[in-house]
Image 1: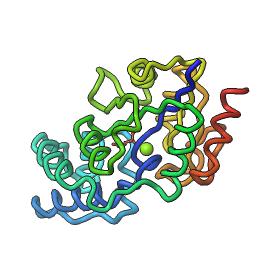
Image 2: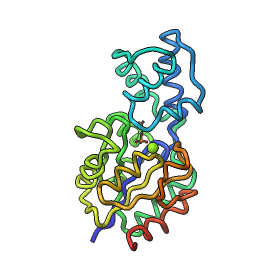
Image 3: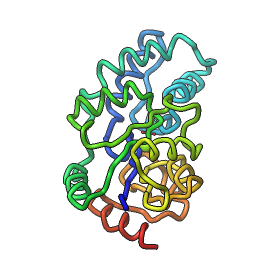
Image 4: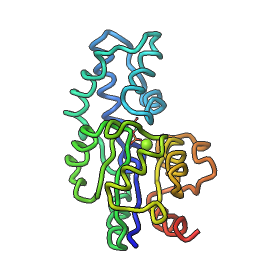
Length: 216
Ligand SMILES: O=C(O)COP(=O)(O)O
Ligand SMILES: [Mg+2]
């Protein structure tokens, strides 16, 4: 039966922080608000763009601004791949998994349009059987239905699939969907977010952990 790996996007496959950081600071500048450091923005990532913006405005003592989401997305969609690249070593990992016959999908809280544009700009969209974005379904991670709907779209089955991510949302959603989860130590999460899941320190460590996860 087909083995499927479901990857989170931001902080797992790609280092997207620089472009998220830049787009957020352009939004802040346009509103005469102080910019954020890269480290601050890293802590805002993981629950989708509406929550990222909520956290940014809250950090400036302001309520959520409904005009911020379309403004941010228009800018980010046009500039999502200026600095964003696959993490070092990830391309070889994707090649190796494809050669081993794994199907691959992306389950991200990033809005679907931005995620598709980013994958296309990096020449990656053909590698993935499905993409579930943060607004593709009525729910998003940590809700397991986001993982299951993405897996279904990829033609996979929970007994033969593994979830890979850098945030507790990924681990929680994967587990609640009945999938083993592997945590990415190179991403944007804090170490405790692994929550007992096996930790891949580098992309190169992933293939063996994926095989083990299905064997267990
Ligand atoms: O958009 C976010 O906040 C996080 O996206 P991710 O689910 O790909 O990490
Ligand atoms: Mg992530």
